[in-house]
Image (cartoon, rainbow, N blue to C red; front, side, top):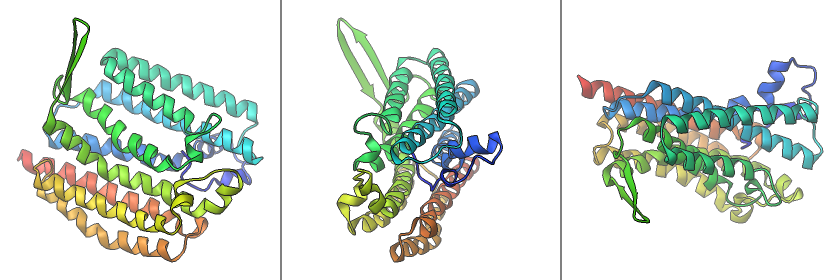
Length: 318
C-alpha cells in the first residue's frame, strides 16, 4: 500500500540502482509490518512462550518480501494510470516485481513446510488481498475499504501468523477432520488476548492510510478513486482522532484483563505528543506538511508500546 508521498515520481533516474529500488518499494513505509512483528515478539516473550527462531526468521523474510512486492504492484499500477514515471524502465520494474514475488512465495511455502496448512490458508489470503489491493478492474485502494483492509492485515493477520507459528499446538485453536466433519476449538483467552493486542497496530496503520487519503481526496477523485475520506467528508478527521483513543483504551483493557503488565499503562503518557499531532492535522490537511503526523504517531506509540511489553516481561520473570 502507498502511505507516503513518492519523491521518485518526479526525479529518480539520476540515482544509483539501490536508491531507486528503495524508492520503488518505499522502504520507509515498511514500519507498518515491522513494528507489529516486533510487538508480537515482545508479547510472546512477556507471555512466557519459547520463540521458534527458524520459523520466525522465515516468516519475517517472507512477510517483508511480500510487503515490498505489494508496494511495487501499487506503484506500478498507479504510475500506469496516472502517466507518471517509475524509478526504472517499466520492463525492469515488472521484472523486479515478479522476482520479489517469487522470493516471497518461496519463503511462504517453506514456512508452510515448517508449520501446517493453517499458515498456507492465511498466507494465500494475504497474497490474494495484497494483489487485488492495487491490481484489477476495481482495486481495493480505489474504494472505501483501504483503511479496514490495511489495518486488518498489518494489525491482525501478521500478529496472528507470528503468534500461531511460535506457540504450542492448540494454544490458539485446534481443529480436526473426521468422518467428513471439520471441528474447530478456539481457546477463548488466547484468542481474546491476540484480538485485543491487534487493536493498536490496526488503528495506527488504518490512520496512516486515512491521513494519506484525507490529504489526497481531491486528487483521488480526479483519477476515479473514491476512498473512505471521500465518503466521510469532514467526519474523517473525527475518525482519525477516535482511532487513537480506541488504541489507548485497548491497552487499558489488556492490562485490566491481565494480558499485559501494569507497566504498559505508561503508554498513556504518549497521549500528549500524539494529541499535539492530532491537533496539527485537524488544523491543516496538506500532504507535504502534515501527513507525516500520522507516521510520527505510529512510531511514538508502537515503539513505546513494544518496549513496555518487553520490559514488563523482564520484570515478571524476575
